[in-house]
Length: 602
Image (cartoon, rainbow, N blue to C red; front, top):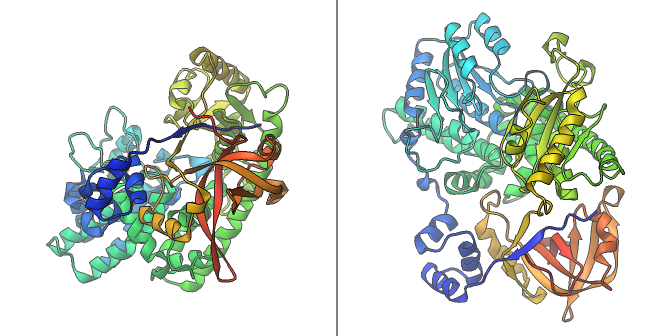
């Protein structure tokens, strides 16, 4: 089944691009790409293309940071038992590691706690708070969670725990009653950039602590060295959490990528080597997003993420290597589970009973709840439909890592966990809000959501969501638009042009990798299937005698469609430089295709 998107070719303003090119002393190609991204003045172009650390905002501007830093330093001085309570994903883990390392440098002996995804779920939970209080903890600093924990904050107060919340997620109508709340979008605040990740918030708080400890905005040398080193940790979380790579996020990721493979952090060294990135001169956001972050997230998905914090804070290289190898194995296990669930889910989605559903709601007795979000995203992309994938509670026997107490699992074995993705086609949180009576709980935003539901109500949820889609979209759901930056002839795709595009790195949300259009292409020879089970398509295209190789990931099933017009096609692609035996050449990574000489636009 094809999930081809609606193509939209952005207008080309040659005069405006020429003006920006001259004034900013950049090429017309880069000028046009900046204009496409809403950057049209020389000042903004310079800031975007030169994201230096001097462009970071004063940490004192971050709402709550000053108060939190004072409380943390007082807690250290008074000998409080401090615990960093971080989320289990790469963003929360990297931010947790930043604060742990700083407090240790300042002479503290902080603990840390990371909840288990499968048993405890996201954020602060009452049992954990009670357990930490019994163990003597009297100051808790959250990382990447807590802003919606209204009742848990009240409990912490009753347990005489000084709660300091640092977060970046959406707030409820009320703010938790905590000793301090650090959040870039806190009501009443005027922070210049509200889209920091959880790890970036933790880094800015660490900076604020360093300033107060030093008694000056010029922090002491040992703390400056720490903060520069911590940028690499923050960059992991920023990329992994898919926040906009603009403003401070862009500055931190650009700086972090430059330093990551040179880091003195044993954990970063070990995981980079295990990922075959240690010899690479310059990392890209793709190296984090598709290589490092999945390994850091795998433990949280199918086991216990506390081990990842151990990796990022250890001072022993032998321990770092051991953990990095384990995380790599966990990721391979996660990939194996994901492939199995995908295969089974595709069979259900393509069955006669489900194939005409406008909203896919799929459930499997043997599916893993830690993997369903990844699978939902893949199915949404493949079928061009919003998708929810559900799984039963995991038995303790199949959870890797420390043993699990049966009592810590959900009270009812009939409560299933699910994750949904919209692919930008519907507002998922709004649809789920109309299904409130059917679910135990649900939360999220337009693009992604999580939920719990009783097993026997899953068919009702499927029926309700399909009905809502038909009601709200009587003409059918429109595929998400695919934005094309410009049309280029194959002959223009030189090594120098592709290298020039590196100026726009790091790519990510808010700064997508440029997607180009090439039309009237002829496919040379028969395309070949590549990868596991022939998932990918590899073929060569020609245009006016100029030939380039192309790879279309996860489009193996569209081979017949590709060849349906006598081998003529139009491609939406990003150019890449390949190196083989010392020779560099440009190839095309296909984002989408249409089997026409001239494509159909929205």
